[in-house]
Length: 544
Image 1 (cartoon, rainbow, N blue to C red):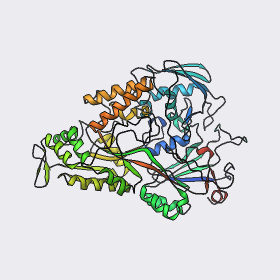
Image 2 (image 1 turned 90 degrees about the horizontal axis):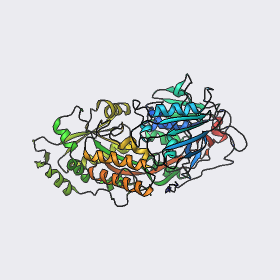
Image 3 (image 1 turned 30 degrees about the vertical axis):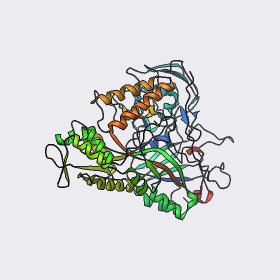
Image 4 (image 1 turned 90 degrees about the vertical axis):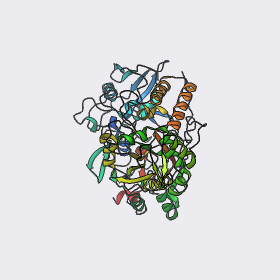
């Protein structure tokens, strides 16, 4: 059965000088920054932006979604076929390929990767996208370079999901550090930088027969300060900024307009949520606040999203609606609108739960003053400014909001392990248009079901309904039925507001004129999605 899909049209920019297909000189080094130390180098456990960067640069996948054309391209698989029921996929693999350490690649490695990916004890965020139904995945190896994967139920868009699955070696002593992508991790100086070297066994070649990638090394500097990152670009110390905040974008635009690009509203969102974990070390009365739909709705209605977009993001953002951005033309529910700024409606919702304003301070029915803290990552000026503006908005309701900025590892520790926090302000990175890739967020059993993760059974009726709808849409091949289910999930999220969505940011980037064959896109990774084809100018390459 053929499934019709609506593809996002991407704004692109080509920055070139000379022959973009000329290979970079020997010893060439591409440099750019990431905002944090990667949490993991295991490609199956990736759930943060820095780790995803490493996976994209080093991981070999069976198929790759071309970020420009939005079409699937063969990679380690030369071809693939799906059965008519949508629960089996057969891959024919490239022959005589080796991992970075020289270990041969075969169907055994794909089978091993899928076994690890779907192991329920691993809790792989990537694996969640394949869980349309209960049951195990069967693997049938029919040749050294051919295998069939059999899932317990149909999975819509099954082939696209393999863009996120980096194949691991079943036999290499280096385990996940043996890779099939264009680069391998050569050095990791925690908190400072990572150095990736060209994979000597990378299988791709250009039309002239030259082995890719053209650039020999990639240096990733860990840089929390986005102002310093922009300054380093102007000094020629780094070659691009994959994603920029609006302030840095405007500043750089004034100095070097030829380097910047606003590709329009992107897929990523900024949101806040309240901690609803039953075992969290919080007072019971605060847990009751956070579990209340009226309380969450009141906070949402008190936030002036238009001001956030205008002031914090300099107009390079728009108020968010739900977990799917309006940039995702097909999947976005056009019936929904952003929650309006309405302090009166906010107070009415609070009054319904027994909250009352006394001497300009809001109290709950038990007499407790309404005060809570919000955590966000230190050094992210956009989020710090949003938190300050939200603090002012909530003060108008008599709510005292305390803002705490934490280094990223400490923040992750709190929201994933100790659950010692009250609310959190962070962003969500979307790598694909298909909602299946967000199964790791919306299934109540998932690790990234952030407000209350890893539930054995859904804590609420509406979460159980989302579980049902997400599994149903993932297992049907009828695009109209999928759209209906996903629309209903968006409506439930809009009504219940487990995440209070604030803005969808525009895709902002900047690229040095010394880096060639660049085609920035809305989908991540915006600038380096064709990393193995990028080249550096001779002067830059030889001076590093």
